[in-house]
Length: 256
Length: 218
Image 1 (cartoon, each protein chain N blue to C red):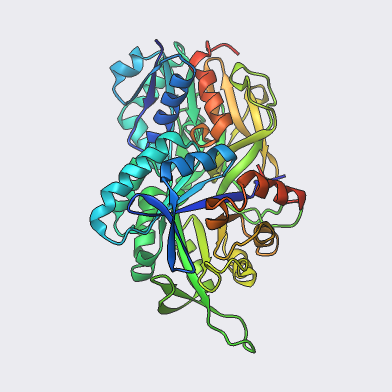
Image 2: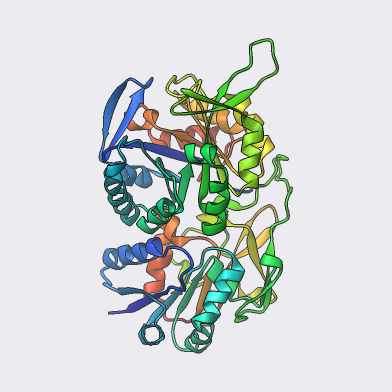
């Protein structure tokens, strides 16, 4: 007996509303983030991830108020990502009630930021988000590289080495998104998740591609991850969290 | 009206602890007053103390000593119920292995040790450190703080170090990772937990609600 595996609903928020781009095109409104978080918490979600995708930085105050409102009503861990660039951004989010912050582009631009952040606030609250894309040809050994800006900008960084480096710099957790699978509903990139999870000593959260409940099981069992993150399958009522947990439990995965 | 003071010694954010206490105080109709403070006057005046903690032990103990929180705790544990959480619990032991060794407050006999790396579970999966996530808590000793909480149910943890008390009779709860370790400890009117009640949804809120009315007796 050890830790239960976690289900983490992800709320992509634009200007104070939960949205989810399907294949990055039509952004469907999925409600008020406080209401949605509360509902997931009551249904048994193990954590909540709040991802701020608001384009303009002058709307950051909206995000802080939303995080405060969620944290006053939701008594499970809350991770906030999107636009975390300075130590002060982290301080603001933690003060607003976040337990962890997700760092993505800023880690690529300045890896030392992860080291400074973990030394200041502790590794337990630093989640490094990695967006990886398969770059090897079908007949070559598997290779993934890090991309930024929603998968548009290549960095040339090899994913496994990058994940190891981020852990060495103090990341307490890795949120791993497959840019090939994100939005496709065709399942996680299992080989990617497994490669990263076996390479690092911290928990890995699988993200990108969930379309059904079997995908969640595969991510944990075959991808060797500690948690699974999903958005659209929960937002639009295709599946509920209790349903997902019952399905995973029935396949021998320990769930809360 | 009961007054709960959450001891703020500048290490980490106490927003969640205070919000959860306020939430159960409204929910239970007890209307407790919740303060977040390091002011000795307020700490002495409060009916109950919550002693949380996040971060590295060396920095925590430095702040605790700087603000004389250790002296206040030693004096106040004779007077009122005290709930210690996570690093707050660890700080009550005699010594911690963290940061090459740190002397702690010493209200409980025993030490704070790090989880060994590369341990495996029954399915040969490597157990990661920090121990982060939801684990089951066995209520090895009955206690009023456990009331209305199912035995062997889940609480949320984030830590790399755990307490190893000398006296087994003080152990109220245990979890496995993979070996059993102490996650709840009590002596007279101190109750200390390794997990985070404010992040443990239903069970955690119930533990806080129990603390609002606990008379400090086992």
